[in-house]
Amino acid sequence: MTTEENKKLDMQWLETMNRRDISALDKLADEIYAPDFVSHNPSFPSLYQGLEGMKQWMRQVFKDLPDFHIAMEDFIAEGDKVVCYGTITGTNATTGEPFNMQFIHISRYAGGKIVEEWEIDVAVPVMTKSEA
Amino acid sequence: MSTEENKKIIRQWFDAFNTKDLQALEMLADETWSPDCIFHGGGVIFGKGPAYVKGFVHSVFESTPDAHVEIRDVIAEGDKGACRYTVYGTNNTDGKQEVTEVMLISRFSGGKIADAYQLAVPIQTQVKV
Image (cartoon, rainbow over all chains, first blue to last red; front, side):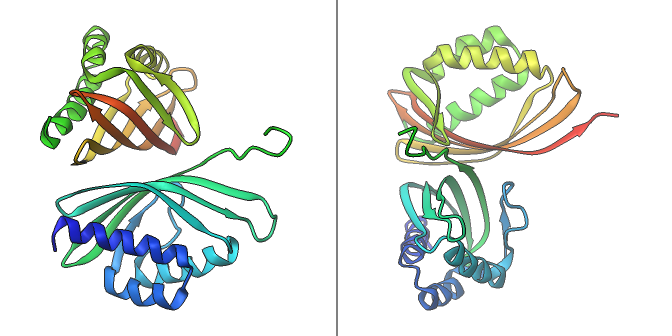
């Protein structure tokens, strides 16, 4: 796999997340995530681990944020790693509150699959109508 | 500037930070950050240019005299470089050990960082016994 191919897989994953198509995501996840991939996320250390954990997590995310959307800012790829960063938005299904979070994510590829990832998430203050 | 040179600029800055030599850091700040570099992240603008960085390093070493950075990764492509690093330090008011995980995205222009986008998450605080 080349760096460009890795970057394409990262892009493809995020685009499929934005379609919120669970069966397409399951299929793609099997192709691009190693079964025992390791996730490092200091904001949500126990969010998910491994392919099956991640599949459960995305189902939960689409329940919590039915209009989940990732706006990608850019990708930086070198060697076996791809950095992507952007903003995740959505509406909390329970509270109706807007959700707005910036992220920087790093994927490490080996043998054509993501074997490790790192992410930092920071919630962006959402202005209420009275502040806007 | 090549991506390797950009990576070197990032590493050089954090290596200098770890020497805690404020005079050297002030000099290096002018070489590293462009005057109109905006420091931002999480919907917040922290400051602009080397002046902001100089003030920042002063305040860090005042509140956290043993602050040091461990660079975990530097990844570069085109005019951008990403750095994943961890900041360690002991807060001198409450003795708490602070660990912060950080990712920085730098955009380079004319051999300097022209945009600095950073997200940071504190992961652990412990009272030193």
